[in-house]
Amino acid sequence: MLAQLILSKTPPEKLSARHLLVLLPKEKVLSGDVPHTGLLKAVLARRGMKADELAKSPVSANAGNGALVAWAALEFTNDVFTLQTQVRKGVQLLLDEKPDTLAIAVLGDETQRGRAAELAVYAAWVNGAPLPSHKKKNGLRPLQKIELSGFGGKKIFSALNAQAEGNLLCRSLTMLPPNELTPAAYRARIAELARQHGWQREEFDMKKLRKIGAGAFVAVAQGSADEDAAIVRLRYTHPRARQTVALVGKGICFDTGGHNLKPARHMHNMHEDMNGSAVVLGILLAATLNKLPVNLDCWLALAQNHISPKAYKQSDIVTALNGTTIEVIHTDAEGRMVLADTLTLAARARPDWMIDFATLTGSMATALGARYSGVLGNRDELVQRAVSVGKQCGERLCAFPLDDDYEAALDTKVADIKQCTLEGEADHILATRFLKRFVDDTPWLHVDLSASRCEGGLGIVASEVNGFGVAWGLGMLSQS
Image (tube, rainbow, N blue to C red; front, side, top):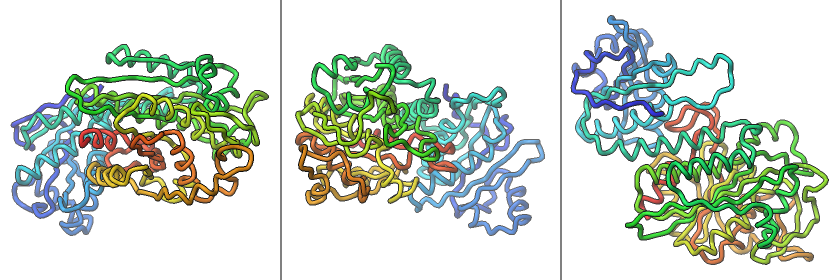
C-alpha cells in the first residue's frame, strides 16, 4: 500500500509532519524564502559547506519545534538520473527514521516546483513502502502519508502512482527467497494477480510444452524434481489500443548452473534470476492501473535450473519449438534456452514489436557494472529510442552491436547452432545473436538486466534490488 498523497496549501514551516524535506533550485539556496533558512545557514557553516555544495550533498538538522528538516538543492540542467539520485538521498535522510508522515516543500518557478514534486513524491512512494523481510524484529513502519506543499497539480501523480506500484511488485517478487517462490508458487501468485486485474491467462505446462515440441525450454526444466515449470501468458487489452506489444520475461526461480555447477559466491542471490519476469509483471500492473492505451501480450518463462540425473548436460542436442537444433555447450546458459521457445510463442502471436527482459549474462555485468543495463535489437530505430527513453526516465541503457559476423562463433558441425561458447568472449552479444533466431522478423529489443541489483541503490530507488526496467518499459510503451 502506497502512502496517501495530500496536496497542502499550508506554509511549509506550519505543516504538522515531524519530518520535512525542502527541495529548492540551486540558485535559491540562501534566499530568504527557504523554510528554516537560518537553521540551514547554520548547518552549512558548521559543516564548512558552500551553498552550491547542497546540490551534491543534502543536509538535515533538528528544528526548534522538534521536526527533522532535510534540504536538497537541485540543478535542473543536470540529467534525470543525477536529479533522481539527489532527491533520493534527501528523502532517505528522513525515511531512515521511519516516519508515519513525510512533508515535502518545493520551491522555484512553476516548472521547477512541478519537476521537484514529481521526483520527491515518487521517491517517497518507492522507498517508503515495505519490502519482504523475514527478520523477527524487522522494524518495518511503512510511510502512511505524504503532505506536499508548493505544488497543486494532481494529474501528474496518477501515472507515477501506477509506476510506483509496478516497481514495488517487481522488487517484492525478486526479493522473495527461492523456497517461497518456486515455479508453482509463482504461478499461483500470477493467477491471483490475473484475477484481481482482469488479465487473460493461459499456461503452457510441461506436458503441453513437450507436446508442442518446446525442447529448449523442457531441456532446462526437466532437471527439477517437481514438474512445475511453465510458460505463462497474460494479456491486457485496451479498446483504443493501436498496437500490440509482446513482453517476454526470463523467470528462472533459482539457478544452480546445472551440471556446470556455479561456485558458491556466484550462486548467491540466484533466486533473483527471475527478475526479468518480475519486470514484465511490474510493467503490466502499472499499464493496467494507468489504463495505458496499448495491448500487452506477456510471456513469462518460469522454471528452475537444477542439477539432477534428469538434467540436461553438455553435448546434448535439443530441438527448439521452431525446429532449430541446438548443441548444448554450457548448462549455465539456461536463460537463452528457456527464452528461445518463449520468444517463438510470442512471435507467432504477431505483435507489432516485442521486448524481452532477462538477467542473462555475466559478461554484460562485466562490461557495464551494475549502474547500466544493456540493450540490443534487430531495428536501429528501436535501439536508439530505447537509449533515449533510458535517459529520460533515469534507467540508463547502453546499446551494443548485433552484427551478423558475430554469429560465426556459434557455428557447430553437429547442430544448427551452438547455445554459447566456452570462452565467454562477448557472450552478451552472442546470447542475443542466439535469441535472434527465435523472433522471426518481429521488431525486437533484448534488455540484459545487469543493473537489476546495485549496491547502495540506483537512481531514485534506495534498495539494492531496484526494479530497473519498469519505468523504462512504461516510457517505451507511452512513446509507441
